[in-house]
Amino acid sequence: MRKKLVIGNWKMHGNLQQNEALLSAILRDIDGLAVGVAVCVPFPYLQQTANLLSGSVVAWGAQTLSEHPSGAYTGEVSASMLRDFGCRYVLVGHSERRALFGETDAAVAAKFRSAQVNGLVPVLCVGETLAERDAGRTLEVVRAQVNAVINLLGVEALASAVVAYEPVWAIGTGVTASPAQAQEVHAAIRDHIAGANCNVAQALPILYGGSVKAQNAAALFACKDIDGGLIGGAALVAEDFVAVCRAAA
Ligand code: 13P
Image 1 (cartoon, helix red, strand yellow):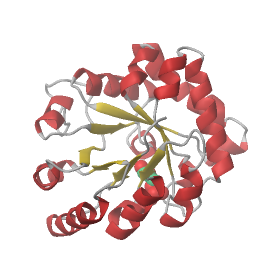
Image 2: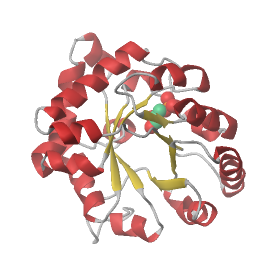
Image 3: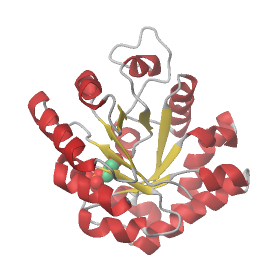
């Protein structure tokens, strides 16, 4: 049985004061839940997050990283820097990074590698646009996104990683994939990976992301191949985030 995992992605939100209130409230209410919980915060708040969460059951991480170990890459942040701040997770290939910052499948795979080389758990985000779904290309798109990592690193790399299926049309739109729609893609991702390594596929946590709220979380998380959620908007309000975590527990 795979343990459920809920990761909050704050995106570019927060300030020192709000973060402290949010993290304190999450810590207060999360205790004792049988679910893995983490938050991926903006870089400048990693120290604050580490201070508030260290020794707690809530892990933390970043939202992206450089594929390079160090060097003349102004503005970039390396995996070893994230390690310095106690990060456990790092998102790679979030659809906003792919769409707004030109991250290709190859770049995402290189970031994935850099995370793992430095002991971080990469959360590989995959998902189709509405146009791709309407064209019947959903499974082809997500398989290609997963293959970029498998082709570079081998399927075994997925043994210490998380995959997040986030249909682009469901992110921040209030339109959630139905449990059946999400389950179909999660199962297809797992089947695809099982074709290369059954054990890796069975153990791999595959999270769903895209307008997950307290009201729809339980039905999504009840699906066989949905192992938790990657939460945007609802991760910014403590009671909403904790309610989603409860739905996973
Ligand atoms: P929303 O939950 O706001 O739709 O965002 C999902 C997401 O992009 C998480 O990474």
